[in-house]
Length: 474
Picture 1 (cartoon, one colour):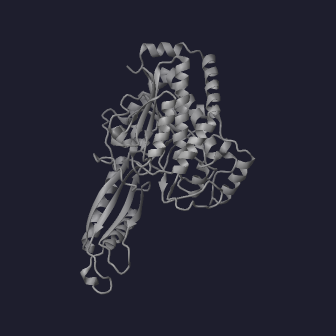
Picture 2: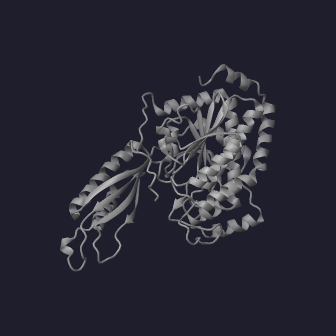
Picture 3: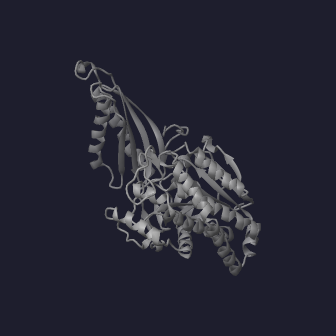
């Protein structure tokens, strides 16, 4: 049972004043471990390992959790870098998600001016080094609280690889790893502090591979059929299609292979596509048209085409019962305050931003609660259809900073980012304590979750039944 009598008795045994004292003490311990947490975050930032190749990053988090008394099961869901770490006994089961993959194609040192690191081909421009370290810190703090308070329940940290285009969590959901979870918690680095109920776009990606016939581009062009022509014709057709898709859709691509020498007609070319829409069935509808365009481009250029779906995420199912609770906890913790050195760094970053929107100084504020549509995508969406899920964002980046930028990478590697980690770890810890001790909140969240999914809901993965693409970043 999710809400057994033992849990109700345990919750009733904790008085409000005692709980408040426990919260203050556990937050102080999170602060006491700040240097260690920052070291973990910085080490993962330096490694900058991309999706499904995060061996050292995953290993470091596993070691820290084992040292803190967690049992760890590695290699889950047929993914070498995925793991589940657990502490405690009985129920409820509260999950904390942890990411740690970097982004390829962008690189930046932890300085306030554009400064790539020579020979480095990836960076934490989405702050997943911070995400992993902050979730680790929260899980350790929650485990300590469970032990010292004598509360029945389990804290479970999910090490989730390849969020950036690899959908690591989808395979973990598909493997049933969230089936007994009562509530899942997550967070993300951002340029502001917010626990708003913000949903995301569903998305699907694939690599479209065109094959043709090589020949000398000047001496025998009539004998050739250019695979690159197939890619370019495909791209032109998709760009024309943009006028005729729903307003909130997003389609983007990059040519990953297009030939080597201009005088050799390429017999192979590849383009990597993303399609996004607020609903999963919207992605499906657009995707059918994308596939038809690929077939048409191949037919028109005398080439052939095949494609491999790489990843697919459902939209995030928000839970306002939990989001409003998380908002209260974030307001108790407060935002980020810069010291003099950090202020100077932030001013340098801020000066490099184009139309930053948020003012410098808003990092210590909590943004108003609201419910909205976000235009990003995340595999947390699939988790949110498996169990009630709630998250927050913290000002780990300078206000106005965009994700996937050199500025976000720079700040993710220094103390401003680390302060955002502390806000997240504290807020997640307070939220977990509330969930363990408030069975009515858990019940209300479950009811909202079941209503939002619908009575006849059946989970469907947008990436089908494919195995994890462990080589998609190689």
